[in-house]
Image (cartoon, rainbow, N blue to C red; front, side):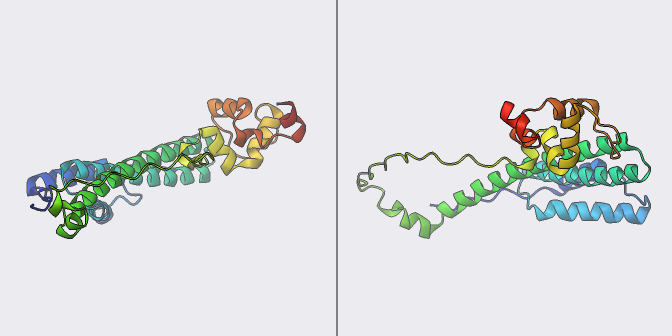
Length: 227
């Protein structure tokens, strides 16, 4: 039986189109000169190539991974500049944008990984040695009866820990700035003499009224017992 064929490589015209789409989605470099733009484009192109896209769909995923990841880094850079200029509102917006872009990049990367892992497994299963081990050469013989399924484990498996990206914005703030979140909850709003950049109004309300374990752990023991 023939081995599973690899997807055809991208045509030169399609590869040029993908590269043009990639460059158009990248933020401008901090030092916007022809040399830095060329270096930025080459770095992004090498990053897409490192993801080894095998067809047009995977090339689109790779472009999304690299472009949103680059946008996340640029948002972090702008947040740092805003902090240096004392613009706390802009800094908060840039940090939120960076977190959103990073989540999108990670999500597209997981889709690409699953697709490539499935294709690699299909190729491995079609290898002659694997087919022989699986009994393909004796496929006309009656297969043995399968072993009975083991009884289910009475002990439930622990739930997987949530990743930082899957947490709410209020929980992320509490993990990054626990002292600030504790003061906000204790004051029921923005406390006096709050020297750090204040959270956005909707985020401030989420921190005050949130009941997640992360936020409740910041409350004094008496309040936690009452809750």
